[in-house]
Length: 361
Image 1 (cartoon, rainbow, N blue to C red):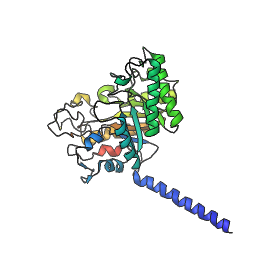
Image 2 (cartoon, one colour):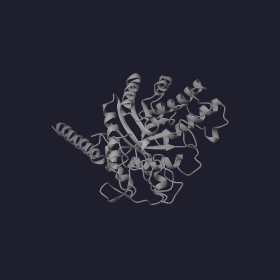
Image 3 (cartoon, rainbow, N blue to C red):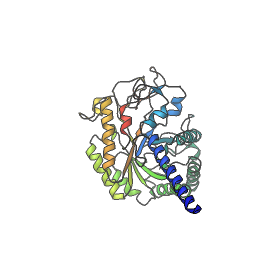
Image 4 (cartoon, rainbow, N blue to C red):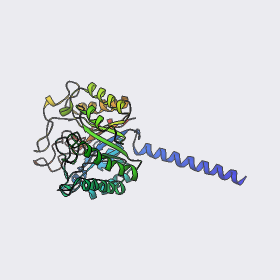
């Protein structure tokens, strides 16, 4: 009889704990589906935070920046990491410290590992200065050891092997066209470390745009990865959402992979809030008439992408790039934000409705 009561008590206790955990998840990310990646890239936030910038929630109340994005349903934060950056930001220690804080708040961590000291993108895949003169075997070893340090000390939930690696990475030795076997070997070195040390982490291979994506993902088809990541900015990657949907669907089905929009953004205005030249500032750069440069246009754009990712086979979410990029150095700065009109906060640093569209109900 005592054993029976004990079993019942254990069952009740377990049920209460599980229910509480489920309730805590619901409360932490209101109306959000935790299996759907509702992400923002806020890599510049540690630098912005040093200026004691004040942020307001959508109702105009002053609140902590991270609390605002969390209460909007964002469940994942994407951060870039550079090897030896020339500035004090986006290096290993800062990213590790910030990731620890974010994880304590319940966010999942998505790292975009550039394998460079600076921006890596289709036009720039510069080998870190400290690795520049290494022979191939030594470079392979550095890639493995650097990746090992990242996954064992930061433990990301999602990890990109390279950032927008259309032409490969770690040039010239990792050029996908000129040094294909080396490119595959370097990618494999990093992937093997992730699989061995953090097998639950999802590995993303990230390509910018959809033009050439079919060719690229055929080239990496033999690599062991989990998710296709695509950057989509209308200014660079086309203005047809139907074409985007068709291409993403084809990629997901052809390679039987989960797929995410790894970067996107859209302006809420064509005005500016500092003297740093903005990247988007003309109507011809927009998708018109459906998505004007307005608060509603930005919201509708993100809503459309979210709906698209819900409909695509294996669609797993999206990430808004530069959500935090307000004019943090003041309205006279000419070396600050080229993105304040595409942030998810207006010129008064108040949260915009588009942020709430990231989550899947």
